[in-house]
Amino acid sequence: MFDKLVEVKRRYEEINRLLMDPSVINDNARYKNLMKEYKNLTPLIEKFDQYTQAKDNFEEAKAMLDEGGLEPDFKEMVQMQYEESKEQMETFSQELKILLLPKDENDDRSVIIEIRGGAGGEEAALFAYNLYRMYNMYADSKGWKTEILSANETELGGFKEVSFSIEGEGVYSRFKFESGVHRVQRVPDTETQGRIHTSTVTVAVMLEVDDVEVDINPNDLKIDTFRSSGAGGQHINKTSSAIRVTHIPTGLVVECQDERSQHKNKDKALKVLRSRLYDMEKAKQDAEVAQERKSQVGTGDRSERIRTYNYPQGRLTDHRIGLTIYRLEQVLNGDLDEVIDALVTADQAEKLKMSGEE
View 1 (cartoon, one colour):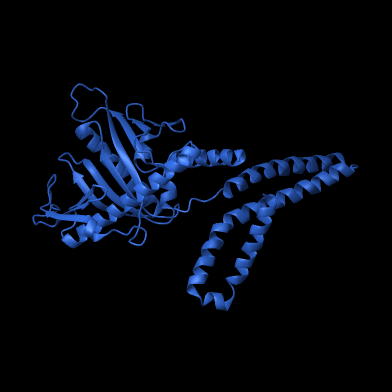
View 2: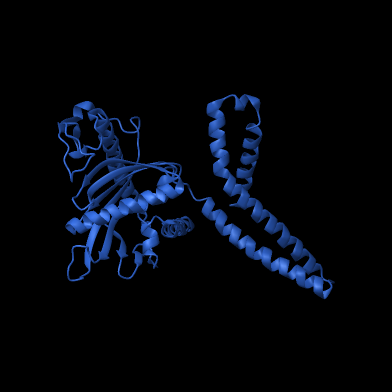
């Protein structure tokens, strides 16, 4: 590992020199690529420098202790340095192993999230809205941009289904573990006898893709226009500007009616369709890989019950990693970092375990 780190540090120093070269500065594409590489390597090199400093301190203290003849007070200080630096080396070594894990090439990309009410009727639709709000508030806290692509609202303000994009750097790295079945346990507003109901909502997190990544043949599309419908309100269109796009080879159907312009609705529908087609292909590839190695934290199984939100106890449980926290209100208000950090840590631990077995 450390031979590899020495090579990486040489590369880092080389990039640093190149970024000050006028010929590189004037070449926008090369400069941009080098800056990205430099930025990606910086956390690794900073951690390696910390490890190197701890190692130097350890070896210095060890040499002095081996030589002997130290005054008692000074020997105590040297012994403390020896123990502290040894502990730091172990910590930094483990952190370096994590930083050296292959990075998910999609981590920096934007996503499209689809939320659908499952078992529970209107109560499931209301919780679908709660999850949509939670993800939006989390995105806002990170400075990311959100936009609704399509929505099917209910009379009580829930969502039968909603698709929305979240754009920004590192979005997928934080949302990729959210796909699956989310279960809610609470007393619905419409429940007169105070009984707790259990409902489910399905979340699908897909990468946002462009035309180049997914080439759709126009002959494979059936496009229908219709008059917008829904729960009503000022944003519902009275003209036939809503769009339904059917991808004939797969049978996928996407509807969009949020914009007053037929053209804009078509663009949004195709955006969702591209992501769904890409996601289908990615799921197929992931399934092939999963046959060879099973990861503890899944990123795509929509049938898996991944999390329970228990309102009476203020409890959230993530079933994949056995995480239980009693901060439900804060989480639903967008304070998701504790949950996501735990999932990322579990995923890293599983990858470290697998890399050690190879």
